Image (tube, rainbow, N blue to C red):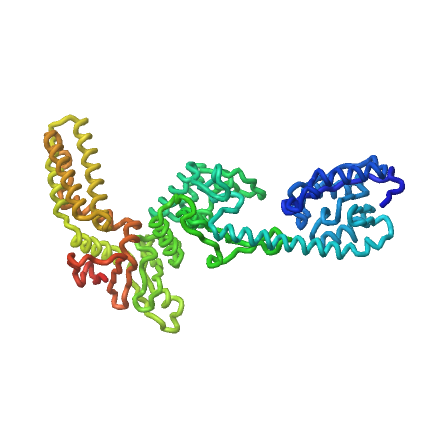
Length: 532
């Protein structure tokens, strides 16, 4: 291979090495390529040349930094000769390689040389005739390498090893162990808060709005990732992002990978995979969220998704179903003359297929159902839990009031009574949910009694709140509060069913203890509530 009139050429010595090429040995190294090309340029008398080097770039990708700079210089007239070690250094995609060899370089007046292949577009040669076949062979090699790499990655995914670039928000790479993630303490605080807000009944949109108001950095900003597109919502949390996080099993210690796959080894585009095709391996890292919280949040999201109207919020949203057809009940608003909202439950099947008469209307005020279920639920739970300790403690606490003490002492007593009430709420909630047995309950009750005695000894609380509440009112307020908490309702109730004759059926998530009574039917506010 000989270059005549070397003074008229402005040469580009192009060097490329990918991670796959490194496995072929030192002959493919950057230093080896550079030494070969510079030696050839010197032997041929080339004096005006420049080196372009892409280290770590695949030959199937032509969007390489140095390659793009070389093309820019060709466009600017600064380069009219390109020299590579072999054809595969130029590229392994036979379509694009052929485009540059057969069309682009000739149109721009660029002479291309491949040293090991004997290709020189500046002269007539049989080596040039078989260039397309060489390009196809290089492409087949790249395809084979891609299959092997994909197989290795799949094997790592099935073993629960993390092979992504950046871990999900809330985690970071392990400082010493490869393919393992650990909790990122700072981001984990935000993750736990997002799940807590969802448990409290806030929607994804409300959670995102709260984080944006407080200026909490988004996952991309926190990770320092570049945002390519400028828009008005840049750097803001979105409801879609929140929803995706609340459904991500990574937060309960499961490695979830394979959500998307590349369309082709030649393309950067990926295709999303259905959940059944994801690779999920449990217990691969420390969880940020416990499984019970994750499951409860998932049910809240499912309930909100399956509820037809998103405009109106009500206590039992997502829990109310038609007894006859089994579908979730929808709500419609029929405001009176005054204009305030007045919601009615209506069978969704009846709404969608009114002409087919597949079901009846089941129309009933949402307010009536809510009051009936809350009262029925309160009566049933009170029958299951012995309220006498609560009433006794409340009564003794109220009798400890004494108006003769100073304002500071009175405030201290009020604070202590508030704390005592909160403790009572937690104790009875744990007793109802079955997480506290009778022995522990009795022990905690005794401790609370001793605290009550200590309050009595202060002889300073008489009359502070005696005139405001009595023991029965305090107990009723406890049941009203707990029966109006959506998190508690979703933990206790499986579903609420409305029948055609306007009966309300309650289905619980737990089995009733045999020793506890269960009334067969309760008629409340004109609605018959039947526990199941």
